[in-house]
Image (tube, rainbow over all chains, first blue to last red; front, top):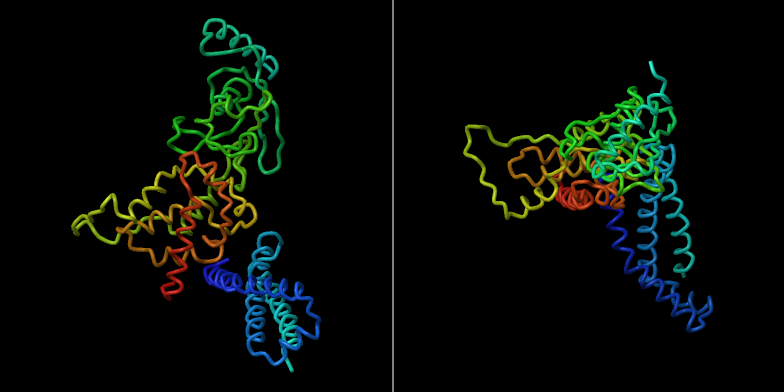
Length: 109
Length: 265
């Protein structure tokens, strides 16, 4: 971990605090209201607001988690900075891909 | 030439005699079983019987073994009064300064297990190789670099200034290596500079007379620097000088982060 990674991890963590709270609130709202998948998709499809919200969330998660995984690998596996960095970057890219796919699935009209 | 059992028997007699004449200084009602690490990286714990005394330090026990039971035992000490920082060892699983640690405060069921400091190579027996520890002080730019010469006027330092208060809170390190041996992050990441070196860097970052802070912040912000710290606070818990290296490292994290955001490092 160096200051560059430290700043990115802290900034993405700070960004995710309100995003997580809103996400959890949305889950509670949707389940309490008994909303169906169709109800939810009707609200999210074509919505720039939800696309921005979950798009930002996915990017923040991909960066934050990748840095965390890199730290775990450098401390707990034989991998050094470079090897751990490559593995963590691949993991972050996978998270970004899966997350983006999910966002696209619910916001594209 | 006496074998070890004969020497021990001889010593027991001497101690008993002494105990009979100096009740206030010794108590031979029971013995202390002391396991000492013998060997280098590859080695084993060997047990010794040492007389129990009400008032003895862990260093006294080690010295007793070396002087009376096995002169080949290697260990390190100098001042014996908690100033030099050379006698730190692992005592019953925790790093401690042995000259100021009373046996009665750490003994468990009449047993002591004493080994060299952890997270460092072992030279022999209880003597750890301190070179990695001090090499990291160098890497963290732990040497004072004067910004002025003797031809300049003496810098006036206000004792109540924020920077001086921060430096004073961390300055009494005796380089014993206890925090380094106690640190989980050092154990997991051999590249990590460790609490003592970073604590030293923090004192210099807060020393207005120093002229090398850009390089120092760069050094402690690199991989293996202050941002590797997990704030487990074992260093603070076990520092014999009651310093708080975790707080110093947190200060470095803040300082380097702002320097980074401002583009200074």
